Amino acid sequence: MGTKGRSSPRIVCCAIPISRAAGKVLVVTSRKCPNNWLLPKGGWEPSDGQLEAAASREALEEAGVRGTITRFVITIPTPAVIYHFYELDVAGLDPEWLEGRERRREWVDYAEAVRRLEWKTELAQGLKLSTLAPARAH
Image (cartoon, rainbow, N blue to C red; front, side):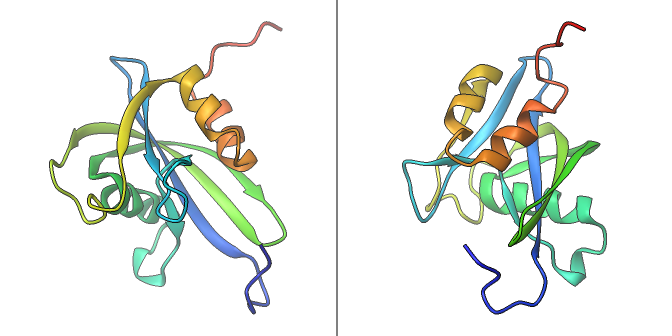
């Protein structure tokens, strides 16, 4: 993917929806490729103001997730896109949501989420740096 005529990379904000009590992450299917799983993400809009607000908005639109952004995880720049990852502690899920007819959502454990996201390196990388990741031995 190139910059699609843009002179600078697209800014994409990504939510990592977490149920801390269950130790799970919510993943959603891609609209373009329904067999591929994603974290809720999308382009930052000037009306969002802060990057965190865009991550929160995308989580609501794509997965019906309501909650609180609790932690900035990482920024991953690529030639076409600059990804900003945020942990979102989920307070609740709307039974119907904007893209509910176009996407499926599913709670999975950390290892399964990493497996499902591996096709998109940046998404797997962002998740691996979240607080859900098992602690690494030093």
